[in-house]
Amino acid sequence: MSDKVKTIGVLTSGGDAPGMNAAVRAVVRSAIYHGMNVIGIKKGYNGLINGDMEQMSLRSVSEIIHKGGTVLYTARCEEFRYDEGIEKGKQSCLDNGIDGIVVIGGDGSFRGARDLSLKGIPCVGIPGTIDNDISSTEYTVGYDTAMNTAIDMIDKLRDTSQSHDRCSVVEVMGRHAGHIALNAGIACGATAILVEEVPYSMEEVAQRINNTMKTGKHHFIVVVSEGVGHVDEIAKEIEELTGVESRATVLGHVQRGGSPTVRDRVVASEMGCYAVGLLEKGIGNRVVAMQNGRITDFDILEALNMKKEFDHNLYKMAMEISI
Image (cartoon, rainbow, N blue to C red):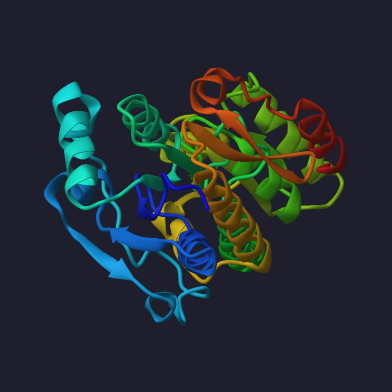
């Protein structure tokens, strides 16, 4: 173990995601296995600035791998966007003997980790967000669980849509990224999938529904990514253009909750152990990522400047088979 890193902190920041607890567990257990102390920092960077921390042990993380949310709690910290807040965070690390921090969260959390790393406190980020919108990684902790939650609820909506010959217009989360919408749309057999990454017109959506009705189908699912627009208005316009009774449903933050899937538990565990391995060597200012199914890492600034591509081929396939 490097002489420089004897105690590491771990925090969760930004929006919660299923699997964050599995990542925390892996960080704590791996660090202790390698002879390091671990301090749990509560409520993200707020807890770092305010000294809201606790010593973690092997038993601190027992029975949490299956739980949604985060036992360390999370928050967004406005103060940490400014140099004064970063300095407070650095001083808190020095006061509490923290030699490095594992930050579990999204791009905003990683910017804080970069700034703290530049102040001399090595930080390693783990991508935890249901949106899968972090450019440097093909997978983020929480993504699989959120998609499965969305599908479970959409399948239930399908039952009532079929009973009434309705069109269910369903908004899923994803902020400005359409990855959840695309995959959930394919998995539920949606007639149309509306995402910011692909231009669309309501006339085209209506035409798809009208064409499908000619083949004998009279109930429909339209999946909409949350950044696209108001689903109530979309549902109203579909009904006006097709004559099919249409109802809007916003699935909302329920997609952030629930027990994480096997994939999220395993990936979170892999990334947590990998992050500890970096800090053990005194390496900071890195983001843990998955590329081609393997865990790797990038410089934080490099990671933040990467561009994530939307899978247009997968979208094209979805439109081909949803007729």
